[in-house]
Length: 185
Image 1 (cartoon, rainbow, N blue to C red):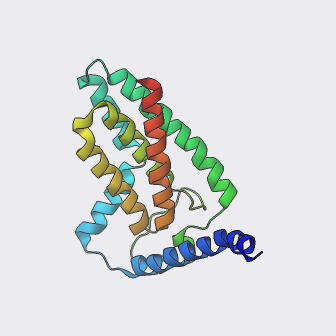
Image 2: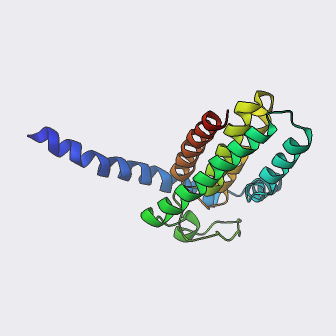
Image 3: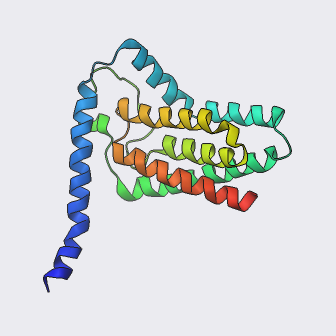
């Protein structure tokens, strides 16, 4: 009889475990006085994740890509559009506060786009687009995933998201990118 009780308690314990680790990391990050170069890099990365970076990649693919460019761009659009829908549903369903709303950051003053943290929309978009395009163009893997990782890291460093928000965003984005590739290939 103890087995069902311990199993039903597992999700609560797991969520507490994750939340506790998220808050510990948040406090460390929010108190870290990053060097100027790191601050500039994080702000540039997060602004790139606002969309202009991916529009630029799409434009370059449109101009310089081969016959696969239309399929790659459609896959990226499908993956990121689906990611946006999932992001909006999860944000409202979870209602998790952003780290910057819980504890002030010592140097970052970027305003969040909304009040909820889970999951990271910037990360979902970055990894869905990078995954979809890289499956069509493997030679772009290092460049696009480096950009996606910087965007994800910037969301944590700037106090916009917890680590778990970003990790779930990576997972959702990669699954969507693979699914969109499979549909469009």
